[in-house]
Image 1: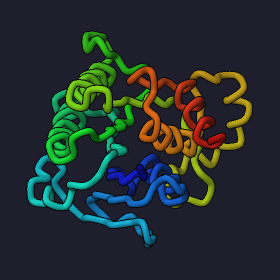
Image 2: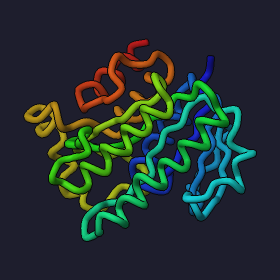
Image 3: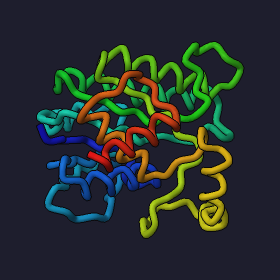
Length: 224
């Protein structure tokens, strides 16, 4: 069965990179982007909904049925943010969208972009890691075997995309060396998108995918 996926966060670097892989892979037949602002792309596979409030997607829920996967790339940095605010923009927001999609699309594969170092116990000292861990746990509970958390570390951007963070142009040349020295912490944005597609197609033995798992899944898709 072909993939019909919902992508969030497509106006950011990670979401844009994942969307790029979806639009360029034959196993993906339809992509619905939900965003606060236009992603700036036109493609035969692509449908876009502009919606400002991700804490309340009830007004658009009639347009969200009929999809078998979701690549949830929407997120914020915790830098300078109090825990209550970060919890609201990370756990509460993600949970609201996920609950709606789980009801509308039984059997959906939900791929949540988390981060390396996330705390599944929800009890550690690092605030962002606790909140991300709580969010991961909720996704896995809601979607059962269809819920996955992806934990990238350094993500090498895809050349030519417009939402690459400015700092990457100064360190991008180091990617081959970083990937060689720190294979457990470094992968490409293309790897992340391809691993989500492969996970939608075939699943994965564990529901939390660290960098080595992301790279492995991306290779499996390329070799298929």
